Length: 356
Image (cartoon, rainbow, N blue to C red):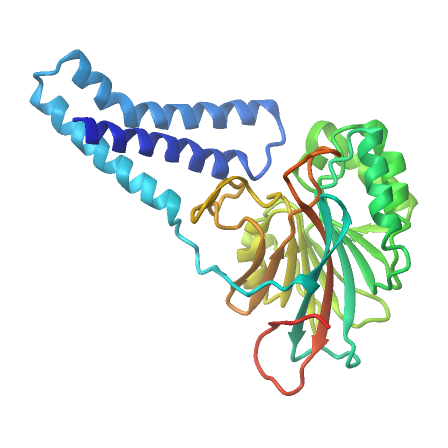
């Protein structure tokens, strides 16, 4: 009885976390949708616990006891699924990190260096270099000052293009100055933006689109383009469209995907995109030894927290983004310096290299 209760309790907690990650983590456009999804999570958790209430009310009921033990078994399965979720053909790429791979820009934000090789890339031996930033959440003057300080420290860097992966701000009053700051990111061939779930709340996407157009920042809203002067293609996915509505991939030597949520890796792999950069997860929350983060906002499960992943021939890097608060201690954020090099000696798909 006690063991069954413990298994049931583990199942309840796992179910609550897993459904919360999957249903609420991908972004909600309206309060009504949020309420519906919260009610659904509560209802499913209540149904799992219902046999336990029945046993306490009627302890001599054999059918009730059978249902109680069955719910304990289901709780065990739910707990195991939460720890080891189905991965939809997505694999994490484990690679030993070196000290040279990051440089601290502030006490809690690093410039992360990553390098990949793409055999089909038509570029010089030094390859192409991109700056990717995500999850700025610029909601105060203090956070804006932090962002300006971070960008000032990379202002002398050279990037072929700057990539902005969404969740700019929940405060409309901060957007004008923030997007003006983003427009000054170092780039040689343009700045490209996909909006995140927070950018679609309260009609904010229209304001962002207007400000981006004023500053010549190109928004990729489920569309594709070629970067002038580089000969590579970009595909930007904002909210997961239906498979029949996927943008067509440009005929280029390499295609780079931009998205806020890493869940879109499945759609990118169907398109045959080579490299994808994503954000949204903030690296996950409530990390436990050996188990990893307990909360990761993803429909695909908590394993898509940060780092490199592969599905088929598509590689994806998930950026932690900036800490939500300017003085958030104990939570390290990052921006990404991504170098993509040609590798004529190799054939096949893209691979991770050591940055030089």
